[in-house]
Length: 183
Image 1 (tube, helix red, strand yellow):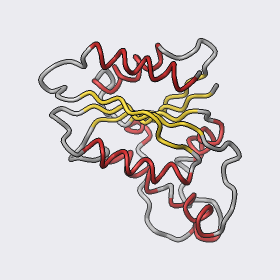
Image 2 (cartoon, rainbow, N blue to C red):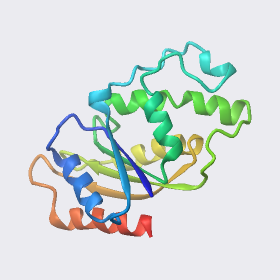
Image 3 (cartoon, rainbow, N blue to C red):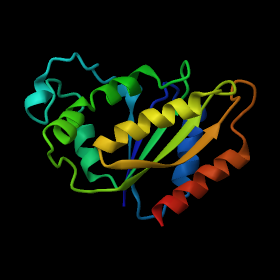
């Protein structure tokens, strides 16, 4: 089983990484995890050049490897902190670059991903209450998932992490979600 983890946090040892590690602890031993740290990758933003309107491609090659992993993944994990009720900038850039899949799937009616109905998980942390953020981000990811053959199935949310560490029960929940999603 191939698990693609898209880490949208700039902090190497922050709350989001704690959620990722907890999730990984619940995976079967034979699971293959690939983690893409989006702040290290810094995807180019979509510039609406129109290159993807004619064929499933992008004028930028910085996400070619991530695209290949998207095709091979059985599960996708979105791990990110809340930024202004939404996703951090590198995650937004990645989502905007999914325009190529929208054009292929909805406009040209092409099959882009051979694997269908794959589950996605959201591991989300917020410094404060995250009021409204969970719903907003879930909707963004559900919409994006339509074009890459993933459906958001589970969300683990750690709130108030500026005032307290990620609670043990939330970390346990992340591990439990990993077990459920891969069984």
